[in-house]
Length: 181
Length: 258
Image (cartoon, rainbow over all chains, first blue to last red; front, side, top):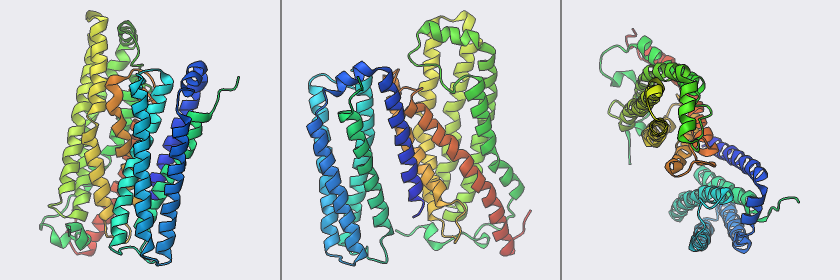
């Protein structure tokens, strides 16, 4: 399963390219990007960050439980990971709904094109990760992971940590970072 | 669910009693790099698609671009149109390698063969459309030139799912390879998944003319095309080597080698 690192590494590089391109566009159109940034709901963004950090922590606990052969605990932690993943989806849907309700779409301006693109691609990662966590949760309930057989679980967990890490960069980049005056 | 792949590598003794034409097989395996060189050099560089002329350009600007670069576009597109058939030939070579993992009745090797072949269709047609625009540029209106330019891009981009299927098939089969040293390493298979994932966003190109999702944008062009450009030589390298390895396996099994 070592090849999964190629996927994670490539995904990270692709996001790094996107972040740099975003910064380049932001620099070129600073006033529009700053004005639109101020219309984002940073509280919801902060809540999303807390949700994903909690989720990542729960998944790390699940891997630790499997390593220690505490097989009753792992499914509970993984279910927590699934539920927090779904909470993120609900939160992001609420945020999108708020934007659409006031007529903000990707066509509004270059900032919102980037906002919906970056958060949309990240949301696709969350959906994929939540699906993989559900798969891992079902397998752990069937006692198919233990300290000697945890490669699949660790691959899923690594992907989920990447999803968390990407959001930790996305949140300040989109919601918090002010243009220098 | 048990698959043919679960039974381990397919040995030559399980195949029909005809010798394998390894020379032709290897020749076809080299068609991947030939296609990439043609597509990158002719379609991309000579015809000016790397980077693409902006989708936000007006009809007059598109017309002027075709007028100014008429000969380069015509040469790039027409030669690329012909050489795109190499992708089909390469797909057959990959498909044959896949059969040595999933068996002669394996379903993904057929998806690979058909996927590689059908991938040629939108590329060839788009090249013909752009070549026609260049050829006829002095007798068509800017609006027609603009329409033909967009027609080509919509066709070459939005037909991505055919290629996604074949790349996914390769990744699935090569990851199932039970050899101690796989014919195609997992790293290439996982890069295949990255390539598949990077294609999906091009669905947005009909709706945007600027930004990361436009057909010249960082996602829809630079990432989507260049993950594929990297997958082709990576896969080619191991397919060319796989032909030699399979030949050695057959020789070890005492099978007649041509």
